[in-house]
Image (cartoon, rainbow, N blue to C red; front, top):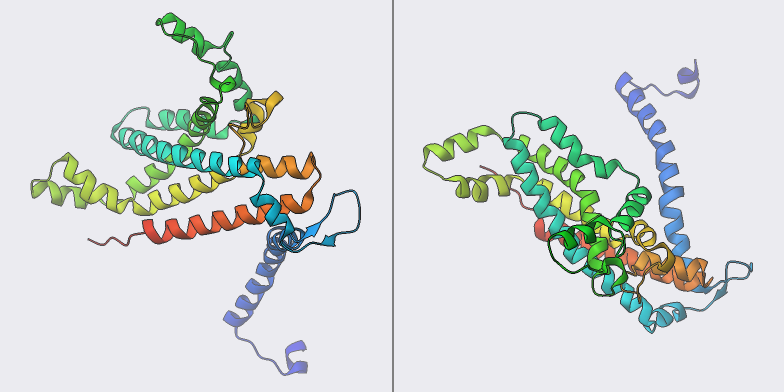
Length: 303
């Protein structure tokens, strides 16, 4: 009766599509409210002065960005984050690909080995960071015990401004490695065996198979792993905070990241406008780097 009253006649497919759109509106509205709306709020806040306690948000234009540009700690955080990304992403890509290639050749216990490599990724980041803090301990850590056993001097690791950043990067690589291995294993299993068989008939060796078949056809997996890994390193926070809990970002700001800088400015100095400006800068960096990587790395390979 309702359709007759309003004079609307919909086919079954149209009604199904209409209900699909109705159900899609709910998660879409949730996503816009949780993700997009705070982004606009952050941009608006970056143009204002607000100390989180008061209700007045005074418009100051680009003053927060000027203050950010003149802050040497922000420059240090930016440089550190870049170093984390440049060292960590290639390391976990190369190691992940090597382990995935080895696992693909294994016929027994492959599932068990894959689970062992994936286990660190499922471990809570805070728990893993505190365990690694103990491993890195200069006084009673097992790593220095091992170095002493083989006749090498003890290392300060997290207590050294020169070593701390790389010690943190090693932990992040260790934790992300299992995820990267799973991505590459899925990519390797999607490559048809007929390509390898045809190439072997033509006399191709192992190196040629890897360079001309495996690597090109693995491009979607490589792009995905690089983009996701880069975003993870640009947003690095939890490992840095918990590996050196009494001197977060230290020693001497040698492990300070952009996200940790934002946290300190917002919730220790209560300068919400400057923290929002740093958030907008980080968003712009992530967006620019992601678009650049997708443009440069993506290849459409057809055989």
